Length: 73
Length: 181
Length: 275
Image 1 (cartoon, chains in turn red, green, brown):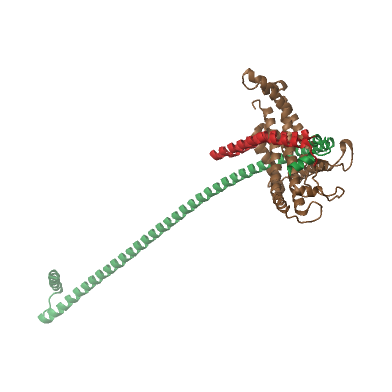
Image 2: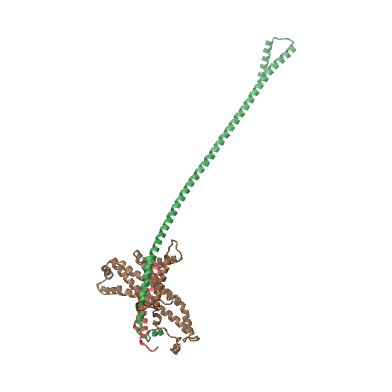
């Protein structure tokens, strides 16, 4: 537990990296639910597209996650 | 907790971060071999069998449907045949009944006619007999009356008439009688 | 912090002493046998086991396929039907039928490797190691580049990808390098990292939850001692455990699905010029 400044760096990298995708996924899922509620018959298609969108946005957050190790290393 | 973990991650060793996120060569080898095996087993064994089975299934379903269709058509045919036969039988029955009715009617008419004829015959025979009887009775009566009246007359008159004049007298008398009758 | 100080006070010689596992301890394993390129460790064993499980499932189900499917055959047919109808046909269209074996192999292999995360006695997602995600992403990369070159010609494929969409010249200057990098680098990289990082994070999450439950409920020194200050945290961690396991099951299935459907999307972009 001796002070290691890289720990703070890691935390910052992941934390900051997660902000954008967090907001993005929030918007995305909200809009997708709105779309499903408006047109339930298109729910299957919307859900597939929503997962695809989440996967793309999520990748950014995961870059942050992976980058944290690189920074730490 | 996270800070704790991250601190441990960052830990004293150092230089560990990158090795965690890069593929280890040995694991890559085994992973690649495993996936290639899976792919080949699926592509060369499982999917040909599955596709053959699916084809067989669809042809089987096709066959079943055709068979069902054929059976249905056969059943229809048999049904229509049966109905035709039923109709025939009904007609036949009607015809037989009609025939029987006609036979009965003609028989009845025959019998009635015969009976009527017989009755007629009996009646006419009886009439004939009655007429004959009457004639004979009349004849007998006439001759009897003649003889009687002659006897009577001869007894009364005591006089012998010649028989011809006698007969004539009697006849006249009877004629008169029958006319008044 | 008192609790952690209590942990610190444990003498380091004591093997039962509480310590947070490092990532090496969580994810790196010494070879069981072999060395160099063929060093066979626990993760390699899990990869080979996954291959055996998937192959055994498909062989057992389809050795003697019957027209009226049995239970096992029904399950396998359901999986194949899902990949064929929901992924291949939905994303690629009729041309996707010839990729169904590849996509099914991807889906099943990833799913089994993800499922290890919550499988009792195993509890190590082998996709949380970069090897298989990297290899599968590389395979998908090869497939969509080769298919693109085959369907549209090598030049045609790149022309359609980089110049296919109408846009102002100024935008195109930015678009071309971005799209180029996206086709060659970003796609396989995100594909591999998405799967790897999700499973790795899931494993860390489960490890943290269960280590916390163990440490706060039982004690930091390896011997049982009820600590009333630690008890609530331990109970929360214990309660969170099953929920996290269920969550990770969902994540594992979802990641297998997403990897497969993204592979299909990339292949679809190569099959049809307008992506």
